[in-house]
Image (cartoon, one colour):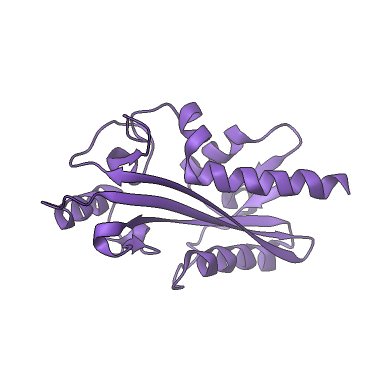
Length: 194
């Protein structure tokens, strides 16, 4: 089955491709010559994921899925949440986002947080949503060089290494995106059996 993943983020495409078996072929936006940034202006992860999926589906006519992910920090009232990618402002890097996050949490004893991913799928004209979460906490400093985004400061519950300190193969067994993706894959396998 061929599916378009509505992203130009090579890290995300690699993570998802590592989870798939040979029955699935993933195309990225670059494969469709869609180079523009798809706006993420909604107030929820669900709305952003659906908007991106619809945007690509309308232009390609292909089956497509899109995700949106947020880091929800308890001490910050759930922020940065849906604004995680642009927490430090438009055009800022994830290093800038991490600096802002660590600055906002300086001196905070409450460090609990969760990553939440929502995947929107448009398959044969119908829309579906899948969610994955992973609970954890924000470290007081960056640790590790792997991963991307907030990985250097996120420590999953029950683990002693940040997402940036563990290999991708291990991250793919516990991450929010992997959990949402497993739900999507279970659905697709059932769907293709019918």
